[in-house]
Length: 298
Ligand SMILES: Cc1cc2nc3c(=O)[nH]c(=O)nc-3n(C[C@H](O)[C@H](O)[C@H](O)COP(=O)(O)OP(=O)(O)OC[C@H]3O[C@@H](n4cnc5c(N)ncnc54)[C@H](O)[C@@H]3O)c2cc1C
Image: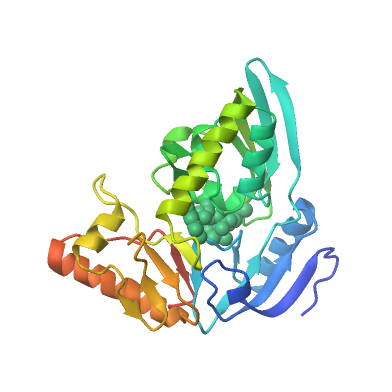
């Protein structure tokens, strides 16, 4: 296959266990790293013309790829990682690339004494993945301070969008599956750098205490239901520590499935199915996945 005029990198048959935090998953047929936004537009055009389906992969911290792999090409925009601050009355506007690490971005904001994202500290994704998922923690969501995004759509058009907060919901955003968030603007207010660091230290220590950070995982597996956190339902269904192969409901936090070492994606998918079944049978509640399962339906 020809990738004429493409400046970025094109890799073939790349095992996804290396690119996802769950550390499972077979090969992606193609893994693409566009050099810049115009290169990405060209790649999208090429895939559209040649009928190659594709998805965007951030840091792979919210996806589980099947053992058989995935037929779509995966596009990673790690090279779109610029960060720029513009002072405003009462704070700054941060313009950040979609491929930038969320954790690093929050550190950079705190260092400059800019508040508004500190409670999302240590969410291990990228800025683009965080916006698509409307990542949140400790009562703060990424959409709270987001004012605009630049998106490349499936036609390869670059669109600058203002953000209407109403369009975001709990782990839901208006970013479509074919849209790539290439950069984002956040309105951050002036705060106290030392206090922000304290807030972030607190967030980190709470995470360390409550999350099984010592094992590979994809974070929370299910969405909460009716204002109640999903871990409660899994706990009530008696599934703490329940295990299929090396896939295990964490003892520390029952909405996490951890990989104890050699879990396969099919073990994790089977465990997700088991949890849904048991929670429905015992509590009459249908849990819905927060994680995305890729490549499981052919
Ligand atoms: C230990 C751990 C703790 C976690 N804690 C939290 C938490 O507290 N709160 C929380 O909300 N989440 C949490 N997560 C889940 C995860 O980190 C977030 O959902 C994160 O925002 C995903 O970002 P990512 O870059 O890894 O996206 P990926 O997992 O790579 O992708 C997720 C989705 O975003 C899409 N996507 C990725 N990049 C882009 C882009 N540039 N443009 C458009 N779409 C894109 C993908 O196609 C996919 O649909 C946790 C995960 C782990 C492993």
